[in-house]
Amino acid sequence: MSNVLSEEKKQQIIALGRLGWPLRRIQKETGVRRETAAAYLKAAGLAVRPPGAWGRRPPSKPANEVTPDSGPAATPEHEPALSPDTKPANEVTPDFGAASEASHSPTASACEPYRDFIELSLGKGRNAKAIYQDLVDDHGLRASYQSVKRFVGKLRGSAAAEACSVIVTPPGEELQVDYGTGPMVRDPHTGRYRRTRMFVLTLGYSRKAVHLLAFTSSTQTWVELHQQALRRLGGATRTVVLDNLREGVLQPDIYDPSLNPLYRDMLAHYGAVALPCRTGDPDRKGKVERSVGHAKNTPLKGLRFESLDEAQSYLDRWERNWADTRIHGTTKRQVAVMFAEEKPALVELPVEPFRVYQFAPRKVNLDGCVEVGAAYYSVPPGWIGRQVRAQWDHEWVRLLDPRTGQLLREHRVQARGQHRIAEQDKPDRTPLSTQQLLARCGKAGPQLGALAEQMYRAQGVVAIRRIQGLLALARKHGSALADDACSAALEIGLPDNPLRFVRRWLERRPQLTLRQVDPIIRQLTLYRDLIDNQTQENPE
Image 1 (cartoon, rainbow, N blue to C red):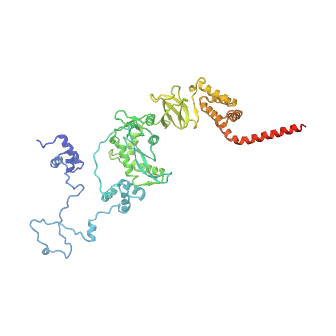
Image 2 (cartoon, one colour):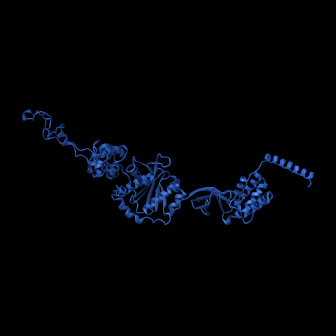
Image 3 (tube, rainbow, N blue to C red):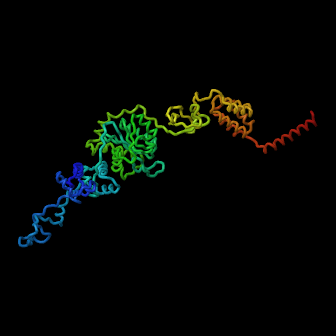
């Protein structure tokens, strides 16, 4: 028969009917006529939902007795005649009068005294769960959540649920991370309210979630938030499911995505690997997506905070009192109980936390060094003019081969303007160009040449630029004054930065211009001639 459906289509209609879908929606979804779908639903013993009657009660039975709206009590002779087609009513209850209203009004809700607060909260966009939690914490409500849910439903109605798939993971196997929109918090620098970002980490088995707030987002912030969340959990999982945001994935790809190096190294430090979702497919991490929406719409909706610590404390209290103690809708078990089962299966955290670093490509200069943080660090010979990959933090600077990732050099962080050159990177003999530079210093002045020699022996190639600075000072102030300044530097025993010492010595030394010197020389010449004439006239 042409109107007999396949078993698969039949089971689909029955499943949608059990979800409470109306016939029109079933027809739109499956392409089966409403009449045919209704027949299969009735055969399966399911009630067919009439159009527009979802949630309504069946019509009441007719009344047994007729009660007049006003006037004296009705007597048999005063009863009106009924037509043969009209069924007699069983009972009619009047709609007017205080007694009538009391008899037909339902029992007053326990939420009625808090109507103003509930309406104000609904105006802020908060849902029934958030309103119930606020009433319990701040107003001492004794009623159940269902009471609040019914009261809120009368004020604004409710939405129908959609079907979705569930991904089951074993304990300690997977966690999911994502960013969401946080509350408005006053910025301590500008004094204005600013929208924050909310980092959410959710375990795949127990649905235990950690919520952390931050003003800004960067690769370093992303890694630090991961470490804080893992410390709160007391362990890590073997896989991490994330979106293709730039902090974690540099180049999305279905088969071979390019991860952020800092994020990849952090996960390797904790024994985990990253599993980025397909682009535009957030359902793979639906558990953390739901956690983000739960936190946005329940504890944080419509609220503002004066500081980030205040907002984080409020979020931690909600997480401890409500998020962890709730019965999850999918597992039908308490989140805290399931987390207690999952925690022993988590990967143990290392003793030392991951050291967050910065990274960037750097070009090797002609002196064999790269610049990082206004300081200079040497690389092995043969890298001049090429690029290396630099990683640095507040203690160490690492220089890596950009192709193989091999460690080339590791240096301690130096102050601005300072150099750090490994012994094996220093040349065995003085290059010809450096010898010519030292010879020029010797011609400019004996003391200047001696200072340049000592600087090169003490500092190596780092002193080349400073020696060039000595020659520049000699050209500016004159060889004689520069030689005197170098002599003063040698007398005090070669200071840490001889070039700076010589420059300050020359700047502080009083000097005369040629225009000022010429009159003095003429006066001294006249005075000498006068003394010579007086000596010739009076030999005694």
